[in-house]
Each structure stands twice: as structure tokens, then as C-alpha cells.
Image 1 (tube, rainbow, N blue to C red):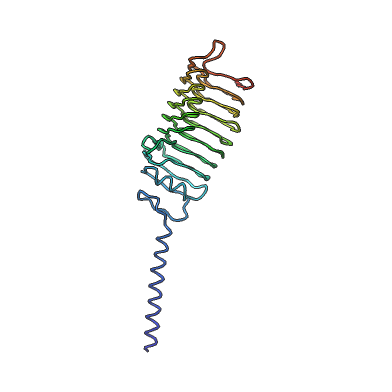
Image 2 (image 1 turned 180 degrees about the vertical axis):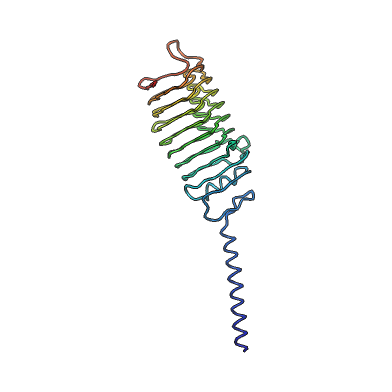
Length: 279
């Protein structure tokens, strides 16, 4: 009988130990994203409704490749968003606002390195050397229903600076961005295949290419407006250094280039070899 009771006590102790250790392992498997957000260790989606950028960036780093980060509300960032994997960041129907004006130091809002979808976002307040709002370093990036506004850069792309393999913009508004040199709204570099549909590029400023500056990209624009942009020298709307732009049912008018020569359009400046086609 004593042996029986001893065996029972031993088995109960082992069971309690297993439950205790198993519970600790389950808790330890959770990931703390900061700001009160906890997710399983292997997660493919998360909803974030308030953040200073810490929870968003931690979610980017820990989410499965191909996952979806859902955002709702306005986010005053203290940390920018740096994406190095394939994923989607999607705002709600009211467009989640990512504001970098509150960053501790000047920085862009988002940097993309991968196959990335950005949807229903307001991207604002960024300030960097290239791509104050969004900088794209390779990969395939799709932006839908996004407002890129009120960003700054020094060299190029106040709103967007792209070296993507492919960049697809649909129903996007790129406005009120500033750059010192080229491409107030967007700067597009060699190797880019850019497709823009129903987009507006307006009220951006630069020395050249107030709205768009492109060097070697192959750009197709359909039902787009490039209007009200300003260049302190030339190419108020578009500066095309090389490559091609094919415009289908587009309005490129009402731009200003202060030092444009008489035989140059204030709307479009073409360098030798660059091709602008109207279809």
C-alpha cells in the first residue's frame, strides 16, 4: 500500500511539473510586439489600431512572409517602417495615416525591399535623402488607394523614390511633396517598370521635375493627372532624362518651370534620347 501511495504521489508531481513547464512554454512562445500587442509565435496576420511605430515594425520583423498587417486609425511614428520581406500592409476604408513628423530624427516613412503591397494608407511627414515618403530598393511593389503627401527629400523623390523591378500605382494621390534636386513627387530610376492608373501627381516642387523625374524607367500612365507642380528650373510636370513614358488619356498641364527655355514646355522636359508617347 505504501508503494502504491508513493507511486501516486510521484505521478501527481510529474503531472504538475508537466503542466507548469508546458504552460511556461506556451507563454514563452508568444511574441510581445510592444504597446500591449501580443501575438502567437507563428502568425500570418495582425490588426494594429494604435502605435508609435514600434508595434508595426516589430510585426514586420516577426510576421510570416506573405502575411498581412492591418492598420486602423492615425499613427504618429517614433520609428519608421523598414520592410525586408514579402507582405501586405493595409489600412481600413478611411485610410490609416502614417505620420513621420514625430520621428525623433528625420527619416522616411517606409522603406521597401521585397514583394510588397501597400493599400489604403496616408503616408506623410517623411524627410530623407531619397524617398521622403517611400523608398523602394528592388522587388515588386504595388500601391493602391494611397495618399503620399507632405514629404521631403534632398536628392530625389520627395514622395516616392523607386528602384523597384516593378512599381504599380492605382488610385494614388502624390501631392505637396518637396525635394531640393529632382522629382518632387516621384523619382524613377533605371530598371523600373512603372504602371500608373488613375493617379494624380499635383502641387509638388523640385529644381527639375516638379512632379516626376525619370531616368531610364519604362513608365505607362493611364487616366492620370500631372498638374500644378513647380520646378525652379525646368520640367515643371515631368523631367524625362532617359527611358520612356507612354501616356494614355492623361492630363499633363498647368505646371510651372521658372527657367524653362522658350522652346521647352513647362509641363514636360525631354533630354536627348528620351521618349514621351501619347496614345
